[in-house]
Image 1 (cartoon, rainbow over the protein chains, first blue to last red):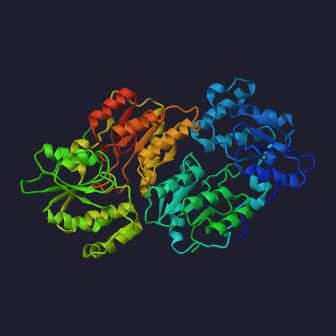
Image 2: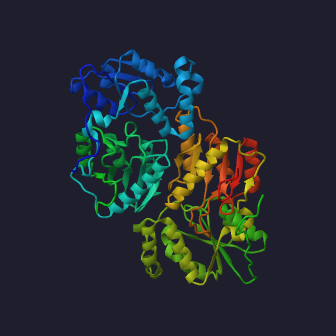
Image 3: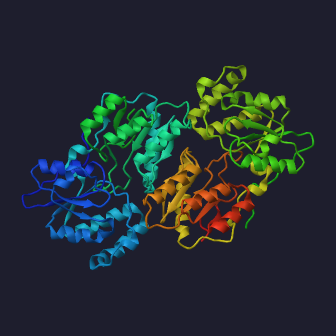
Length: 297
Length: 297
């Protein structure tokens, strides 16, 4: 295992107050719990319809926010004297514009938000980061709070790719990078040496479900194995939306009949690492961190 | 409407015998009926599980062939004194290797077929074309038999794209070309100025169904309109697998909430043209042929 890039933990002082804007999935849970274990008291912004119910996130101090109230995020953070902020987890819904109530806060952020929307989602995240930082709150990446989440290069479990899997890993990496450069998605599935399914806004779960259905329907008949590859976009905003896998990704890849998972080392996150490795070993999948050059062999 | 490229009709003499290898969809029906109307007697190779039942294809002279018997195609064509051959329609199944019975014909074609499979599907089509032509049978494109199927530049129905649709058309065209260059797919859906879903081996029908589901689930909330764009691959084998739309594509694009369809002029096919235009007009969609440069305005 090689050293991951950018995995430096930030130092929080006793007077710092850190908020976790919690989308869906395990990442915000990992981040909040890790902060609590380190003696910090995270403040959680619970996003309506996104933050998973039944997790520890609901046991911390926090406040709920609807997607449509995005303009109220900065005032909310200021009201609670937040000094640092982590954007973590998925936001799959988009604002329903007719549900947005006009406010002074909205008028302040709207011109930027509209310009960002015109440029695509990655632009929107950047604007959110900039807007928060303009108000004196530091935005930090999940990997700066929990650096052990960052994927490292090399095999993570007991299994390594077979020789034939490398053609899939290379084809998947090429496809994932290409669509990432177009700001469309971060993931691709490659089977038989070629990419056969690409991630759009539907996300990795639905991408893998699609591959499972194609396999069940005989559309990939005669082709065993295959891989899921996730890569960061070339100009990825590292403080938000890093490519992520977790135990559920291993389950879904297995259900899709894939032989393994490749993720970009140093610019991707592995949630619940121990569970990912345990499950991959049990199901017979490899999980490998790919270096930037994609020429591991 | 401008003149489409490559739309020259081939001349068949009285002694020529033309076969249509009929995959799924309306294209082989259009080709066979057009040949019959011109006084030729098409011979149909009906592919098990692919050729649509209940069409006129079953009323012509023909023979059935399983996917796994692909090596028997050339002997079959030779047996019926075929001089010209059109490969038309979709083949979504892949051979189940264990169902292939060894034969002399298979041994002849296998080394090439395996090499082609290693290079991806586009390579496989090329090999099929080469193998047929090596046996003295001329492979012609559907558009050379029915040149009026070729998409022309400009709006095909009553509606034209609105100004905001052009950002979608450009984003969809960029995405479709990019994945085409990687030999992954030919189609993309763009909404709000960015590509949000990309075609893999699942095909355009399932791509549009996915967009419909994403729309229904609120994953594209607040974003109206959007377009489907289909483009040929940069090094497209023009005699097989040209991007194609038909009335069902218009229905599916409408169900997905899209405002229109863009296809590459001169290198795409429009099946049942009159019905496409009638249905697009009735449902309020535009259908436009895009010139190669994508700079119609």
